[in-house]
Length: 387
Image (tube, rainbow, N blue to C red):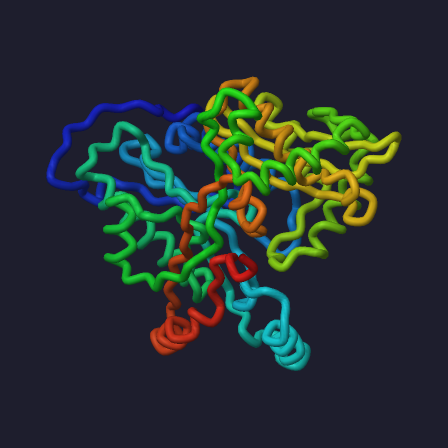
């Protein structure tokens, strides 16, 4: 049975929590698609994307979904992931991470906590979806109710650490009120890089860059004539090569949290046929790189760029993909290109802006919560160390 997704209510002083029904769902499939998506209208990574992630069978993760309903109408929603969280996850590889891993060989739970987290390891940021017809005066109360109920459920389920991951900053008024009411600890996360597409063509864009960068980009793109570029929405027999490139790229990465599967890539493309595609870069018959992208009418999100580090480097495929993505934005009238988290040096050089994200957390154990609050600066990263 489909739930109603529209309603009208008066903007009173506040919402009575007795009229709100909180539920945790084991699978997104039990929630009506329209009821979920109406709360996340601005997001590309909503129902179809999250369902593909759930069905991708990522090792080490479980998925839950929180909803708040008002007389049968979903008025707030949030995806949740469950995992054993290693506190050094956000650190660059080095002596500290090696030390932690060495200790963990003898003490498996060292600096590892059972985490229930609002958000997803596979989305660009964490958002709590709110029904657009909710009166402004209700938003903070509804969000606070969702956080309180979800945290209580997490603790009852054995997850001592409760968090929100990759929340865009600055916080909106309603979420800020809810988070401060719950007394979460704030920890900086990796910022998101994006570029405003407010130029009519590539030459105008290049003119905005420094003269040295402009000269370097023109030189790098000369290799483009040797590269064949193809956009695909099905991987077919290319899938093994895609996975090979993905794992090669992941193993070179400083930050490793989730490990994607073949079901992730095929699921995203099949679940979002109008909003997802891969760009394939070949030299001769060899696939040397691929780029998974999501888009709507305004935004292009670069999810993953994976490349053969040895054979792809002479062709400057990272830069070629950058300009290919800008051309896609220009052709389709998109106004924003979002190139994601980490590896910011080139993105800044190419004119990107960084938007801050943060993680908010609380631990059920007051003493451990104080310890985590004290040591959290050691395990935070803004991703800019190599600038």
